[in-house]
Length: 171
Image (cartoon, rainbow, N blue to C red; front, side):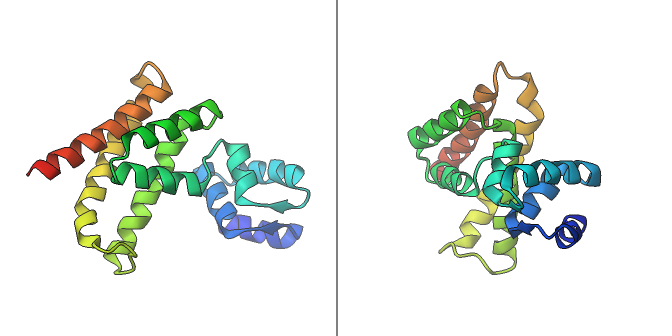
């Protein structure tokens, strides 16, 4: 992130904070990859880089969609979640990256809970559930390439989360 921020100052490019984070996360620590993405984004964005342009170029889902999907999953709104996943898939959004974004969202939410900054009315109830969701997502990510399609891989990962919710409700 530091390199990207410095590049922004030198090149006099307008970035938003989310865009910098998205570029840094997607580059996996490679400065060369981050600068390559930044070059492409500058060409696309006429001197400014937004999180929306980063999402488009890198095949990421918009943070709002990830948040909406997480709510559908946590509330066991199966039809809405599966429909949203299918819609993302049909728009060419990489579902493996969506799963990665969900994992990052879970991580951030757990961090907020542990730091006492959660807006959720019952954060302690969610802490354990989110931890298990993260573990399910790790397995889903590992097994992604072994599934017949990305859509099936994503749906099966989300279904595993719902099985966990149902099991916990029965206890």
